[in-house]
Length: 178
Image: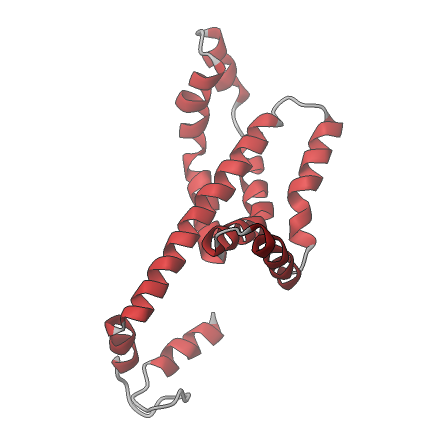
């Protein structure tokens, strides 16, 4: 937090260069950035990619966690390993690999970027969603089944409402990292 605070304070300086501590305070750089169409377009693209990454990684994590409900330990370990493995790959290696994969097949650069970022955040979003699924009150799920809820209805009417806060946290984390 301290380096970020120093950077924000330095960005409020009134000089032509970033210096800390600033000699005077001004919002000049922020005004110029907001006035620039290139900066606004880049910020919008970044926000759209971050939103897509959040949706993609949380949905994939939720589907995987839902699939693992009641599965054998062997299958759970296999899926856990598969989804957590990208967390061991350095981001630069992932970026180079995605570039080598995306260019020859003509993948849209924004789609490739979204997939690469999703792969980076998937291990953590999966852990967050999986922990939330493990903490679910099984009595509520059994009650829904006893009342005749089909699996799809149970997901929409019971599981998603119970997990909405944790899914939102996982999505916020994915957006922040992306």
